[in-house]
Amino acid sequence: MSDLSSMTPSERRFYEAGERQERIWVFIVLILLTVMTIIAMLYVVIDYNLVTKSGGQTPVIGQMTTDQAQPEGVAVETGPNAYTVSLVARMWRWAPGPIHVKQGAKITFRVTSADVLHGFEVQGTDINLTAVPGEIGLVSHVFRKPGTYYIICNEYCGLMHHAMASPIIVDPARPEAEAAQ
Ligand code: CUA
Image 1 (spheres, protein in one colour):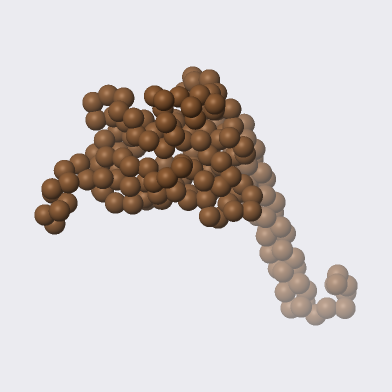
Image 2 (image 1 turned 180 degrees about the vertical axis):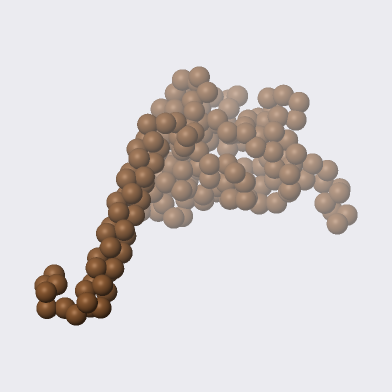
């Protein structure tokens, strides 16, 4: 409605003020949309470490599953208080069984996928990388507290995506200390 001539002066002031407000809000929304679009594009263009790094290793899915030095889901000692756990994600599991690691040790996970993208996330930690077929993602973590942690999948991977969880059991560094508690 813009028939200003039939309005009283106060009606007209009200109408004009309303129109000004409306223009301001349309402007704010346009600015917001522009900023959000730019941010979304930056996420695509700039590497925010959202995707796993291969760490210079070549894809060796077959090797990872058969290599005796790197059995799947088993912590292999690779240095003083340092262990490596190799995992091949598959629809819809992370490891053949529970993964045992030691409290306070540096645990490096080598993670790849045998099929589709999976999201490797360990609850209660900041571990979060994408399991990519043909790439080995590396992520290290020190579990400070013993207990059971769950690897969950945070990348939709099909029918049983929600059930794709495997336990990591952090064994106490000194079992007798735990028993005494
Ligand atoms: Cu694997 Cu979702």
